[in-house]
Image 1 (cartoon, rainbow, N blue to C red):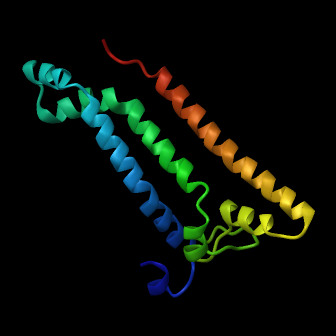
Image 2 (image 1 turned 180 degrees about the vertical axis):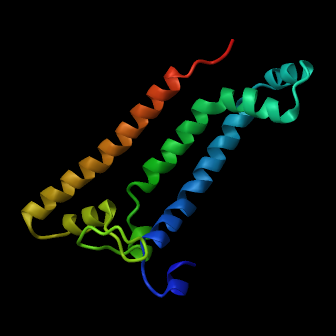
Length: 155
């Protein structure tokens, strides 16, 4: 969809491919979390005279916030290790580049490439890159949970 019309690999194509993988997870998780919010909470807000948009934003979303964030984190964790979509869309670049219209370096491809290498030091770098990717997801998860814990739910 993106690479053929552009005529070359690019970071934009890679981000589009990862978004296509991530959106269904987030949408499904959000749908499930919103459906778990009790009807009595919604009915209570409507009984107090709140319009539908207030019921959704102030009651339903706040009650489902932790589950929605969990869905986003699961989506990010899933795409953080995806190599195939990036291989076919963003390819790789051995050097640091900020030009998103060209092939761009990415950690999943480096892990894939270095892990298959016959050189021991490259294999060790693949393990280090995998560790960095896992620590990124862990740090993101801890920060999200910490921020969610700090937000006070009105009584």
